[in-house]
Length: 179
Image (tube, rainbow, N blue to C red; front, side, top):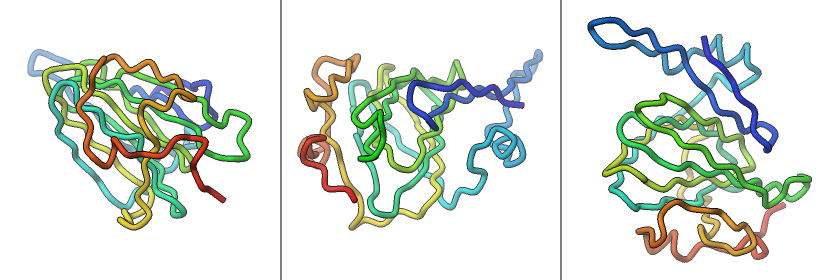
């Protein structure tokens, strides 16, 4: 069983799986196709990714275009502030963002639909982030929305994040070229 919380961005949801605990520890079903389908979410993923990052690292805001990817994101160690930005030109929420704390402690997951940019900032000493994607990675379609675009106004929890050269050169929302 999963609990699904909607956000202010249609299609972006926070998923909380049921955690079974006893004196030995716990058990979590982190993905169940039947539960995802029952919640109206995709249940077919084609690739799993694992990212390890240290405190203060900010990854993103990434998206693949034109072969959009949906992502199911979770944290298995540490904590991140995870952000999703609506970059669908025809959306009434174009440019709006939502943030959620994902951690190994809260077991929450975030579903990021196609048409959104995604990124996260590590707020613990380190974090392992796992995510499933609905389309295979295509390097030449890999794109980045700049994490500190003033038009977005994202309130990141780290004042001076560590970003890759690629992420530091992302495009502003106003400069995105999307069909």
